[in-house]
Length: 124
Image 1 (cartoon, rainbow, N blue to C red):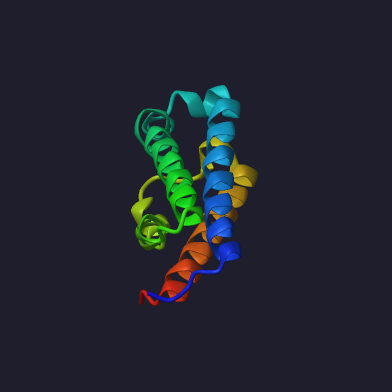
Image 2: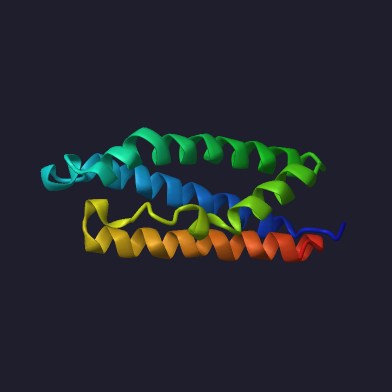
């Protein structure tokens, strides 16, 4: 396995954390017009709890990376390369179009950072 630059590993973890934190904040700030929708209910009940759990998993993978074990980080990055596909059907506009655009940008940053980790590690 090739050497993963520390900066790439940290960028990946920070990008995922930023996405999850922004999604949680957007859910908290969603207006009443969104709160009664099935999409918002799905976000609150399923998507957000899963993302928050995965945020902890990625943080733990980064801790292990810093201790010299790259495997968990590579596995997390492999998984997050498909984040956009995994979220098909879970639209980001539950808190308005401006928030959707920002969440889309942050999600794309996660995918790009995950690809960088995978490429650095030799995973295709």
